[in-house]
Length: 426
Length: 163
Image (cartoon, rainbow over all chains, first blue to last red; front, side):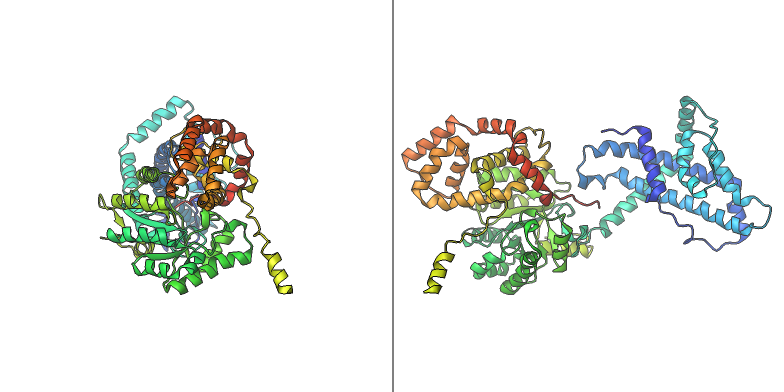
């Protein structure tokens, strides 16, 4: 749904006023001489900085419109990597810097001239008021800094000089065509590239946590990196076939096992581990964990992974909730994190748990893989069905094509955490 | 003696039913709903009013999964018994489960005799999956199963947090 033009702006400025643009007037006061303050705080400099603010808000308005148009068609995991969103964040930091700087100088000058008749301390008030009176758009853009100054406009009604829409449009057009606009626009573009680069390197870290860092879906994976996961085993008749197919292709996968099943055939579980596969926990008996008591939760998560570790003689790093139920439940997530486990969801659900032709499973998986943002992710299979022993090898063959890389979850996550340039290298 | 009596009576105690057991809805209803949701998820069928997109279909599929698991386990457990298989085939038309049962039989490499195979194929033709799904499409949103899934889906929902 398209937001009204001005409504988007109001939301942006509201967010700026209320906290998105957190400002601190106390932390960053520079130790500069009073002469320097006077020079920096001259009417011309203030006007220049207010004009810069105006231009940044104009650019933000443009990016916000584009962003609003895109979000209706974008999946949630795509929205925040859109270029418009990155530019808005960059603009936020630039605007914050200018506003902070002006307010710091204002505070400095106010203190310096406290007992004199000089009105330098109110110069910012006057300039902001003057600037705001140009038009309703100017007033909107100055709202954040006005609120911070308290007396800037007071309760007086502003008399806008530019009244007609035509006048405002003409003025905006002239600003957008100015060389200063072009320079600041380019500045935003360059800075947002840097923001995207630092985000990719620093933000994708995973560790046991009830917050987002403690849950992986596969959407975070770098391009062409895949993880095959198999749940509910081990079941010798089917798990053995799948492991052999993986070994044939020199591929590794992660098996989310039920401790109950492992105890029925511990040798099978050990064989899977000894083949180089990763073992992870999928609870003890596969109940819906949102329906069990606290002590049962301890059993299904804590005891399950401890016993699994002991039987298989391997470190257990990951847990997957049965049916994926409880991912948004803080108690359950805290329990998982408390056992030093990272929760793993998926972004490709093959639906192989349902009886159907194996070809249908393959078709669905291929279609879903094409929809991922970076041809990467976590594929969910269940190694207890015959149909999966037929479908999974076809997908394994597909993953061997087009430079895709397949690793265990532990390999992928630890390399991402270390900031490796190439994750899951061949 | 007392121990024997105790053991004998204990063997009659059934495990408590999972609240999400299929006993609350018929096998046919759950199977058909799952097939409908899968078709919407696979984009082989247009979304319906209460399942407007594939994300909702995926969520409802996760929610119905525990019920389907029990149903599948029950059916698979009876595949060793020819009498049970015959009974299932003879009643599959009524519950629109002929296709599903056929899939399970093939999966488990159960070979039917000529007569039973003919009977199953005839029933599949008489009430084919398409017409069953069309019926499900019209009735799913107003049914009790959907209302129950709506209540339960919060446990299965997952909103990916903002990066």
